[in-house]
Each structure stands twice: as structure tokens, then as C-alpha cells.
Image 1 (cartoon, rainbow, N blue to C red):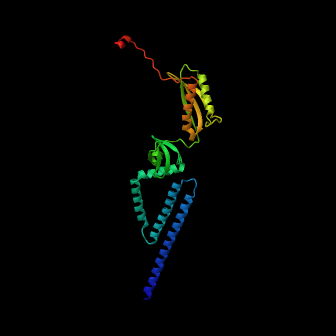
Image 2: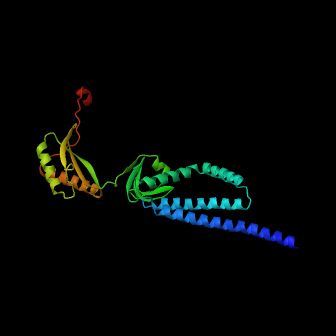
Image 3: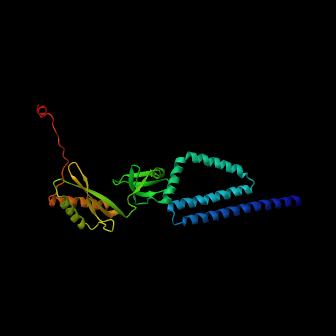
Length: 272
């Protein structure tokens, strides 16, 4: 009886210590994982979506390591278990390689931030205003209000043009006048229109300029180069084109239609 009792006490102490150490390992893993998650989420340079994903990944990775260590406390062969988990992870990775490529591309987009929510971008043949950006894809709205969901790998693999990141943009307005019109008079007329436009930027190096750009088939092409705020880009363009046309008409400067000269080698055959 005494021998059996001593054996039970030894077993109880042995397994009690194993259970206690297992609990301590799990608690330490939980505390360490939560601390790592909090530290990642407090990094201000990271996007909220990315920091939440990385924080959760680190926390559960630490918990997984703790769980494997607990199994080792109870005599489980963790080497074979890790091999099985590794093989399963490889199989899952191969099956989801397209999705994982989107996650990797999304992480790079969230870290480098070539665009943000509210920016108008173009990549490949697609363009629109970004309404959301996640780890798997981005949502955009086109100017005619079409919804686009673009996988991150497609965006990351293309050249990205961001039209709204810079606060100021330059634009060129082409104005054609007839060869019979006075070029200097046309330039002065356009200058008067530009002076009335208060939304133009006229800082050093960004002053409005008007030059002769091309001698076309039926017109002398002037180029009006201006700088505006990005938000005013299209509104100023539309208003100026209307104002310039009206001012040129008022000053008698014509904007010609394209003309073609036909030379008929046999007029008699045409009459027949």
C-alpha cells in the first residue's frame, strides 16, 4: 500500500509539473504574442490593415510555437509533427499561390503607399478613384461610376500613375488660328483671358506661357501652358477653353476648319 501510494505521489508530482510548465509556456506565449501584436500595431508608418494583419500573424505564430513546446512536455514527437505541418503548409501555399501573391503585393502597396484612398490612379488600361485598399485587392470607382475590384498582384505588376498625389499639375491647351490671323494679336487676346483667371498658379517657374507650337496643314497651332491646383485641373481647363474661344471670336481671330486641296488631272472625265 505504501509503495503504491508513493508511486501515485511521484506520478502526480511528475505530471503536475508537466501540466504546470505547459500552462506557464502557454501563458508566456500568449503574453509575448499579445505584446508583439501591440508593438506592431503601434508603428505609425504602417497602414492599419497591414499592421493588423502582421500583428495577428506574429501573435498566432508565437502561440503555435508555444503549443508545439507544450506537446513536447507531454512526450509528443514534435519533429514529425513539424514535418507534417511544414508539408501541409507547402501544399496550402502551392494551392493558394495566386492569393498569396496578392497578399504579398498588398503588403508592398501598403508599405510603399504609391497611392491612397481617394486618389485617382491608372494602371495598365484601368483607371479610377480608389475607395478601399486591402491585402487582397483594391476597390475603385470610374468617373462614370463603374465599380472595379482589382487584385493587388495586377496593380503591383503594372506601372502606376497617380493623378492626385501632387497638389499642383501642369496642363497644355492647344489653340489653332488661321494663317490669315495676326499671331501677336491672338497671343495678346489669350493673355487677357489668362489674367482674368484667378485660379492659375503664377509662382516662379510656373508662370502661364503662350507659344507657337506647330505650323499645321490649315492652322497655326498655339500652346497655352498653365499650372493649377490638382483639384481645379478640369474645371479650369473647361472654363478657359470656352473663354478663349469667345475672346478670339470677339477680336475677329478665326479658328479654321481643316481644308484639303484637290487637283483633278482630267476634268473632262469627271464631268462625264
